[in-house]
Amino acid sequence: MHKDALGVQVARIFGAPVYLRTSWFVFMAVVILGYAYYIQRSPRMSWGDGFIVSTTVAVVVAAAVFVHELAHAAVGHTSGQKVHFISMTLWGGFTKLTQGSAAGSLLVSLAGPAVNVLFALAGYGLLQVVEPSSFAFGLRLASDANLAIAFFNLLPAYPLDGGHAIESFAMLCGAKKSTAVKITSYVGVILIPVAVLLFAFGGMMRTPVALIILIYLCTYLWKNASSHLSILRHQSAGYDPLQAKNLMRPAISFAPTTPVEFVAQSIGNGFLAITSHPHTGQLLWADGHVLQVKPGTPIMQVAVPLAEPPISYNALRYDVMEYLNGTHWHRLPVSYQQNPIVLAWAVTDAHHQPIGIITHKDATNIINRENHMLGLDHQI
Image 1 (spheres, rainbow, N blue to C red):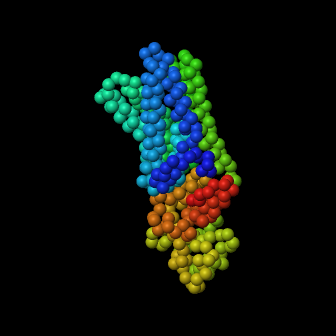
Image 2 (cartoon, rainbow, N blue to C red):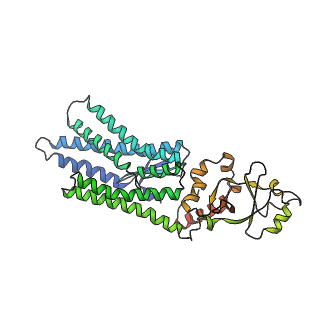
């Protein structure tokens, strides 16, 4: 996203710019003036009282939303993710982070709603010591709003924090990223009839406003769930360059004591060599350039270790990206992360036998080329 579309930069936090969109200023003005007008229609509320109530609600909720985004950024930064930017918009805020580990992403997702709960609890606590007033009334409304924001954000559906938390939890339980995305998407779909039933049996469909809210909620859930399922279908179609079977270079397996000259004669253009350490069983790899050594040298002496774990041949883009800058990347030893030129993973078939190799260089070349074509300015 181009920086001009993000709004006006007002600060830098964790090395990342913080933007305010023009719509944010408009929204704040509408909330303060509009709600003040609505409140003062009560015979017991003057224009001044209405303005105090609406300003209290707007300022407290805006502060909570901003700290909500800061919490995402702070937890992500602490867990090793790079914060690209924070943008405050008409609909709240958005924090752009690089991918992180499943555990780190789960904490990032939960940090935001936790802030809203804390703001609500602090507001309710403050109400116990302040005298009844327009400010106190506004503070109660703001506290109620923060609880509602936390509850809504924790719904287990995309693109809400609860949806990303479900995705991360599924990955912590061993699911592939693509499987976790599918699970989260279907949970979002299931929430639609659940919401309808709750509104129906809770007597909340008796007013036009409640009906509009229900229609908006169901449309919101369906749109985001179907969008992710559509991405999964696209990635599974077979022509995605980052699908493992398309990205891998085919490889031939050799015994660890095989002389390099025999290996060189056996592999053709585009093929790589795979072997394993005779004692540890760790998979190793070599290409044609590495094999230009003294004849008679066993391949295991010149081969380079492959990173763990191997990649399944049917892994989708979502899954491959976890090896490049997600969960599997964060689990790599620092020595691997600092030398991505020789970083590679074995690709295994349905019987867990190595059939190819994916190199970090090949994958990042494709991603950077795609980013260049889309006009994006960052590389992984």
